[in-house]
Length: 200
Ligand SMILES: Cc1cc2nc3c(=O)[nH]c(=O)nc-3n(C[C@H](O)[C@H](O)[C@H](O)COP(=O)(O)O)c2cc1C
Image 1 (cartoon, helix red, strand yellow):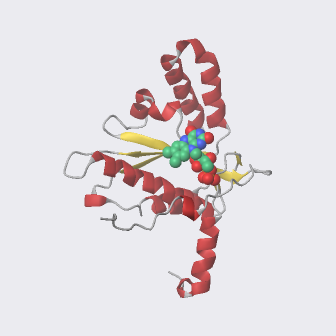
Image 2 (cartoon, rainbow, N blue to C red; image 1 turned 30 degrees about the vertical axis):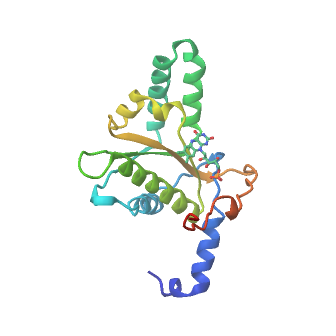
């Protein structure tokens, strides 16, 4: 860790940068690769993990593999909803085609004393860490689910047979010009309660 990290100034600047994170759906090439991609994935592996279950699995879908993945999504959509197969298929293909990098994030859920819920939460925390890492490295990213993430066929294709499950797709790339406007952020007071014991 660089010495500079120990200065309060650096820590605050880093946190300010994190607090400016926003989801970006409009992305272009290049996607993170090499050392940048490794850093993003390593950030995922820093998620808290009760019982050392190591539930995390990250499936990268990039380059030419995206075309084949788009076809798989189209086939899954056709099984889900045969009447809308053409439209849904094209939507899935187009989504994958315009996304520089997808990371399917999921939990490999194992039996034991750690509840499945906690293993899935840990995979969610990994996803969040990766979003933050992508942001800190200057990439745009977004967490999406939609029908594909809940489709058992898509889960199986990616190695998440129940009780394992996908928690979503991270779409990552270089922010495109004219990003979506920054959403207003909520007030602390709307979400934070200073607990007090109930009155007798
Ligand atoms: C588990 C999860 C699934 C999500 N799925 C979608 C999705 O399928 N489509 C979508 O537009 N936004 C989805 N979102 C919301 C975006 O990732 C994002 O949080 C939202 O657009 C607000 O932007 P912000 O992160 O800049 O506040 C999802 C968020 C979470 C946590």
